[in-house]
Length: 462
Image 1 (tube, one colour):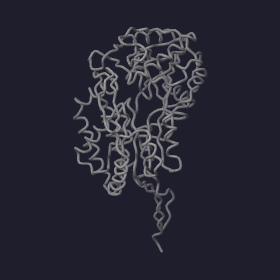
Image 2 (cartoon, one colour):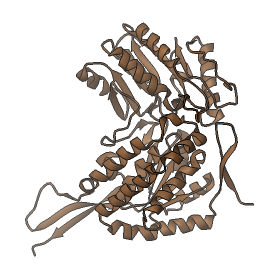
Image 3 (cartoon, helix red, strand yellow):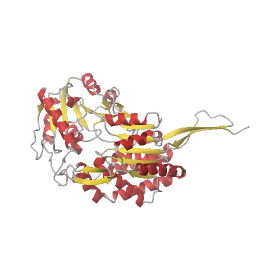
Image 4 (cartoon, one colour):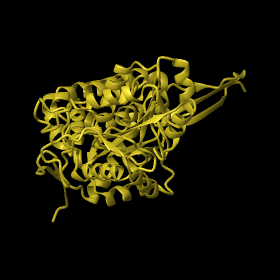
């Protein structure tokens, strides 16, 4: 019997899509096609590669009316928010725009008569992208486009929860005539993925997912000397200072905490507020949160759909229950249909009287719950922000830019925001520290992570 992957929709628990897992022979054939196509693709001028990427983007955007409800069915995001193509456009356009400059050879800084010396940036070869379900287009495009622009070929394995996204990328690339083997979407199980990573046939893997998943990938790739890009867990903090513009901070932090049902890599999971503005902030945050409408994501009135899977919602329920047992106070307590154990439907929750003995303030939630703590000063806030095994982003809310920079210099994180959060700027490198992983995506630095340096030391005068 053929093994399949079943996509269970969070909307009603039915099977929305089912696909056969590729045979080992098909996987090997895909890798061989990628290797065979890569040499010719690397010789294709960067400008030509860019034309393919922009045409792919246009083809993908043309599918918006079909893709938006597909996303809702697959992982629960409300249709009212459309697709992810604003960010997909921004990132694709930017990485295409900077490619020629970012991939240029770098001359030696100390010229020598009679010599030509420079470092060329060569593609790595075959890049595997293991993409997550929470932002299935945005997270995938972060590596797909720059990897292809750099002259690599790409094999995409998308999350089982968003199976159809990989097919949409393949459809778009096929429509624009991308040479065969340059991009391939495959459906694999975990064992096949591990064998492929350990085969020595993949030159780089980019994975966005759990810490456990990242460790499994490192273990599978051990001894192959392939390069890795790993974006793993997060517990992103915010710090609200007394001079913050309060209505702006409240509105943006509520959105940063609860957009996409809190299932955001850089979503806000904990907020530290200076004691001088604590009461005002909490009051505003609670009022703003109560405006959410939880329900079927296919309904235009819904502003928060179900979580992607019931087990994710049950983890939030457990974190809330533990926090309440330890003395936390819940402020929303919204009544939502089907909000019960074993259901992906879950209301947003705001907790106060929390501390770092509670898992909701220490362990990744990845759902619609946030804890708010009062702090006396910067020193306390910085210590608490750093009291985490993760470090993807941190946001600081103040009108004093230099003060924000001084705090940001001491926070253990990959990105420091001021007066914004939950956003990825493709001109700035996307990276993390500690258990959030390693590697770097987007920006010119992202290209350095998808190429290898090759030195040319040429004596011209003999």
